Length: 68
Image 1 (cartoon, rainbow, N blue to C red):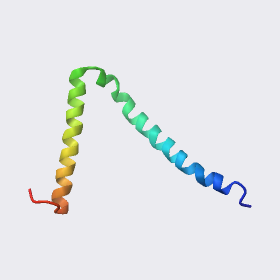
Image 2: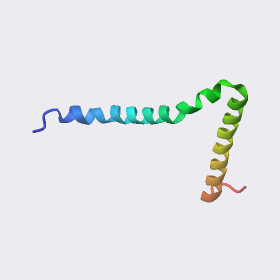
Image 3: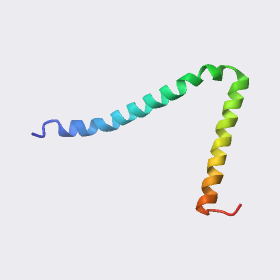
Image 4: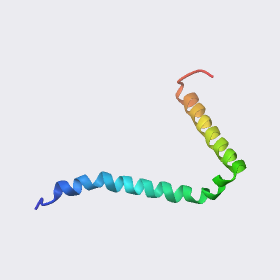
């Protein structure tokens, strides 16, 4: 009844990694041609860094971690 049970259990992490990697690659693949031009590369990186800072400051203010 439990033949291969642990084999199936140990396959789940590999399955999870495969799904997450596939999702990541399919999400960001359309942006790869934009990264070949330096102007759009700088704009995309600036937007990414700005959104990380915005998210960080917003969460810190909402959670009361520090006073701004």
